[in-house]
Length: 460
Image (cartoon, rainbow, N blue to C red):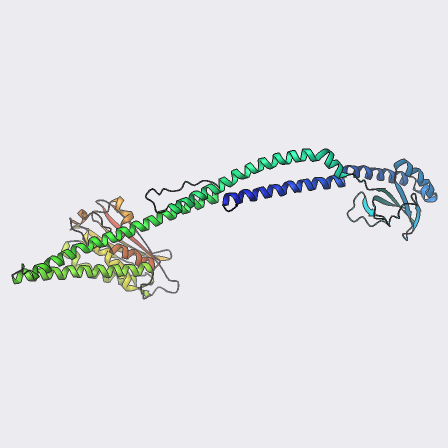
């Protein structure tokens, strides 16, 4: 019956409310049984009687029987003990014996004692002389609390309790709905997923439930983004493979059908088949490389890397290409850069890819500049070009697999399959590094790479 969260919350609140009302009833009954108001009246009589005796202490020490008058006046029992705790006089000799008073540790106005028959007495005591101790006592007031409770309080308490219980249960139901309904929405949304009409669940209820709802919405967004990436990946791979496969199949068919009937035509067909198969091979290697990097299974050979030497090698490699296209390729590296922990070949792959892109998208007469500097606990490398730049809308997706900016920025010719920057990002992630990009159309693009330094490496 109580299997849902809402019903269990309601039952829990109902039990708590019932227990609270029961405790209130019990406390009220104990209050009536003890009746502190009547006890205070008795304590006052004890004090008054004690004061009257102390005012004429010598007289009562000499004539203990004179205490009878105090007894009649204040309706109390007066008992005298000697210093050895022996009973000297008792105004109620026929009543059960009251024990010698204990020390008033808590300094209370009166204390509670039990006589030989188990009856409770309220008492105070004072020393009248060196050999006489006065005890003033009176029976502890007893009230038929059950009768009072049943006659005067039972009906109002039942009525008030039922009203309080009804209101509390209504409030408990509202609170349980407030907590459980948002959770039920999340459950329903989870069961309905995936659905074309899937919408984010509106956060409501307590802060914790709202945090859960936001986390659920964020999870759904990540799942959908991952699914979109997978769909895009399959579509892009299919598209990238379709073009070379079509060329290979077409020219292979031309050779088989002897359509390419001249040595020059056959040589051209074979060259195209070779080039397209090489393109497919490179893409397959890039995909395999990217998959290993994303899975964290790539074999990184970590060692101390001299960043200045690494960047100099990159510049020397691309200098002929830059000279052919009329682009200035510059390097700015301070001589005191510390050694960097990393895989030298992988880092060279990063800078090679970025410099290659910068040269491809920079027109003749432009400039590509590499610079490096120590920044905090790491090294920062910048690759800046004066090319046509990247649109702001394309910057968030620049490192996605197979994503290519409008080919018009490369003169209408696309380069590669759009895997280079994705591999760059994964390599840097494997080195705990970061990459950022800023660009402005017509004013070039800058890639900034930050790589952390190892504490055990020192400046050479």
